[in-house]
Length: 165
Image (cartoon, helix red, strand yellow):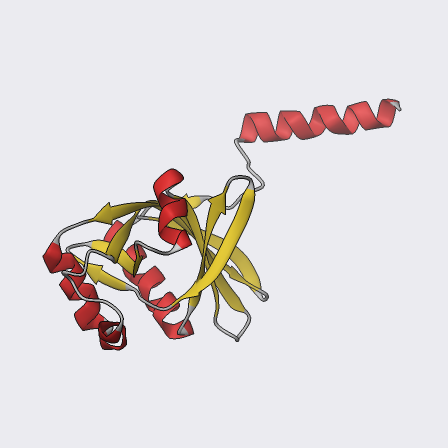
């Protein structure tokens, strides 16, 4: 039992005095470049998975819409969908994507709605396949951007790298 307490004491002293965390350090760097890197990774995957919370139950679904507009990373959905209703109650989301080559990305963020018509039109122009279901003036199209985003790049062959934007 003594050895357990000695190990616990040494571990807590090491973590406390060295400021070491078992999570990767966040590279704040150039937030615009960090956002672009996240955008490019997600676009390269083709689809990503967006998770929300409904009560105490996580909800996950595939998404494909994604674009940078006026220095913010946006995605699009419909206001009639459960995902929209879930984000209105709790705007904290997480995005996950895998590139099929041993690399994946997780992004935690707050989803913030942008109700401007020009933003909706920009997203629809960036994703013309959505125009058969949505229009900028339909009252259903919803565009949201990521705020307070922390992106974690993972790899089977390397360490986790963390950035934010």
